[in-house]
Image 1 (spheres, one colour):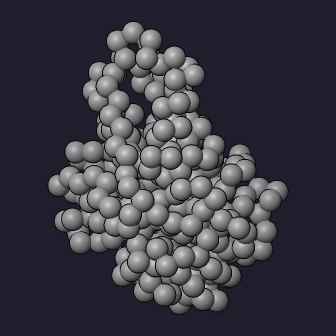
Image 2 (spheres, rainbow, N blue to C red):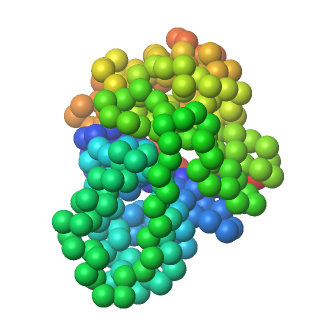
Length: 252
């Protein structure tokens, strides 16, 4: 059965129990990494997913706490002898910078490097990112400091939908992305420019009429403040969960 696994749940400053926010969708045909920080090889091993099965990477935006692991991941794949293509999706703004960053490492000169295929997504709502027999992933621009996308994953066999706000202020695009979803994964950094508080996440969940809310990208460790679950519940009557590293959601 397809699963969504949280590989990291913290905002930009991680602690010993929470890595920066990123996650993976594990299906029979495809394994899709959403953002790439730290070293995904170790996180995959922790959750029992074969790193060699990674087929696709979706990069939501070009901020270090979302893409800093890309160079090491690509180098590790190369050193481990990967030959299968890797498909990377993102906005022009994001992928242009990823290619520029890799150019600084001289990756075009790495011998016998495996194929990397970039898919540049337009800044339009409900754009199809990828589709396979188990799920369909769509994207829409959200409101952050730089061009950023949120996602919606439709699990085709169970007819269940999951929306991910990514980093964003409250905006109508998130509501349309999440409309009627079974699960909304919404950031809860705080009432800051380019971000949302747990209360605002709860309001979005209520307005989009989702089945459950998971808070992610929240302050952790010494920077943790308040009670995000209680704050979200002032606006949303459904189930609210604080996402934790290595937790898994199944969609059979």
